[in-house]
Length: 327
Image (cartoon, rainbow, N blue to C red; front, top):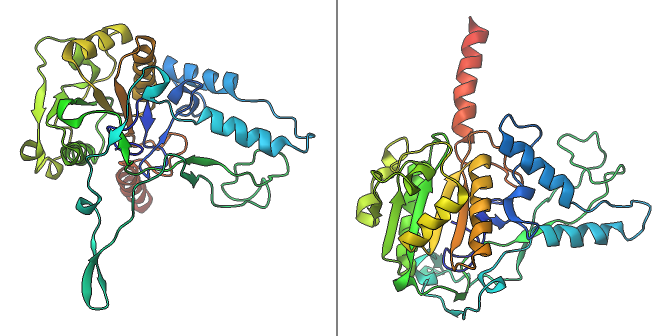
């Protein structure tokens, strides 16, 4: 699930700020967000370099530096949109709020809770804690004085206007990288949500990016009946793999398959690949949305409080540590 609805936005969307998401910048996407420190894989180094090259160098002696920081933050984390590259008209959403809002007991009678659609200009505050000093536990300070600065990201939720005709959409789902607890649950929920919008043509790409270029890996048709109970099983219903074909080959396959949306479930390396796919789609001016769903037990994707699978990994590590301590 991405920011707004699957049929609203184009661009590489991460579930950063998993409300569900925050979409990565015009500086070009996830490259500015997924790198932490030194990575053993070459892609990790490229990610970190892209971050350092694009970030504005602030002069803290300038009394206006906070505004400059916030403007730069907004620029880097603005939403790539279909209308940036092609002329496309919006249309009223097919997503009914009545299907997602629970009933509340009000004065003894059940009434529907009406939350409304999310405005495109709505923002969520990324950091809600004001640290007193650089030595505060968990402090991430912008300047030496640990000044408080506001960081806002786009708010998730269904939009009133969408940019695809759901009946004509073909959506694909692919899982890459290593296995992670909760993968099947996410696949299932993506399918169910797409169907709520009216999308009928949903397919799974088998075994990661390999599924785009290996002929024996056929598309897997997906619907609510197929995915109904896959959340009860471990692993990935679609299979996983690491690495894959060249970006141009993958985008060629996306065009040949006539995919309108591609949901990419993976970690930082996978999202670097998803961002490159997004960039190639924009270069070709394709009406294709690439939606990134962060999946990593490492919890190493920027802007995320916690990625799914991380808790399970910590629990497993605790058992090993406790056993060693007892011995």
